[in-house]
Image (cartoon, rainbow, N blue to C red; front, side, top):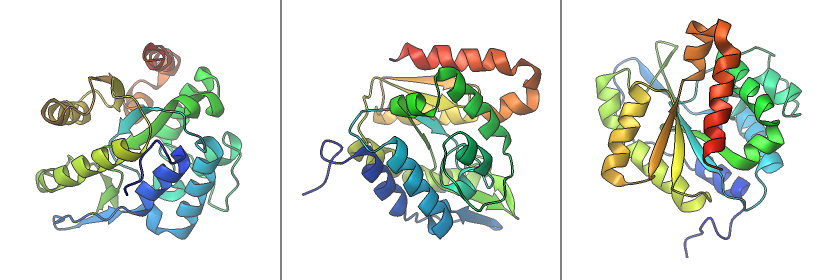
Length: 232
């Protein structure tokens, strides 16, 4: 009998999903998969994080990023959470080098404005269209930056969305997409065909904000919080 979101805690369902990621991808030359959950330290930190904030049956709204980066989820196993935020905001110790990651800085400004990690993670679950990351010649690569990778990734992306919706309790009326450009367009196209959610609300990507609109961080934090509260 297949387990469902009704009889699993959210933390169990999330961790089982991540532990069992087995992509069958034909990778272009120079491209490698980055799986944080194949690393014992990242997996242990992810287990501690999800068991701290998600050990219940409360449904969350999904927030979809692009794919993990090397210095956030790539080392901590937690989306948009670098080792500094993991310790100072989430209260989870690690021996990882305390190196900041730009997107994590912005996301945790949003989390603080929302009411802190307990309040935020009680309402939302951050994942990604591709829960595994990619690198090309050692540099972060978005799943859509290479045409071959984009084409080969689609079945994997669809499988991941379905598996999470099957086991992680949520409502399908609305979800959020980090990125108002390519990531949103691809997600919209997939959703139109497969009807995962009634509505996808796009948000400016945290890295874009930090790189190009850093002087207006407070304004973008406000935009995030207002849009996140729309669905509650």
